[in-house]
Amino acid sequence: MGTPARAVRSVSDDELHWKRLNTKEYQDLVGRCHASLHETQPLRQMEENRPRLQGTTDVTPKR
Image (cartoon, rainbow, N blue to C red; front, side):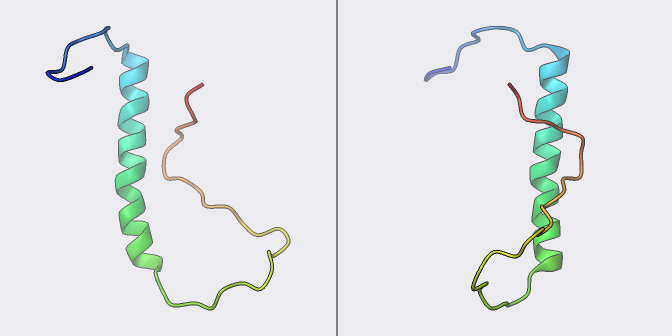
């Protein structure tokens, strides 16, 4: 924290695992984006029951 950085506290194994999952999720998103990119027309209105983006890991938001 700060410049230069200094340790504020230790990171638990669970926190480190959570961070690694999020980093992998973010990196995987690049490939998924490039693989599925194509030009489209904008929606005029929201589609009912439109599917949500599904992640590649089991990561959940930190609370």
